[in-house]
Length: 120
Image (cartoon, rainbow, N blue to C red; front, side):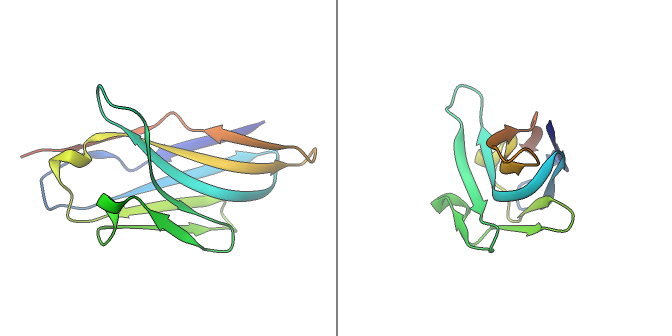
């Protein structure tokens, strides 16, 4: 079993910053991609950013220049630094990790999400 826990969300004013964390634990041999998604009320879940094990990164257009994804492979943790936040960034943010388990199987695991609210 693998557990994924997000943290770091909260209420922030427009222009502010937040740093989200995604910690994976359990029967992990290797974590491949670590990805951040978000889902606003009434909207579909969208991929915000991802980072491969080798550190290759990609972002949704609206996040480029404002968000930075990073990871610490020793800690099985990913981060999403979000700067210059806008009200339209308000959403529930989820982390998904692709794991090679200790039983040599590959699965995707999701966390429960952390709420980000950008409002004055």
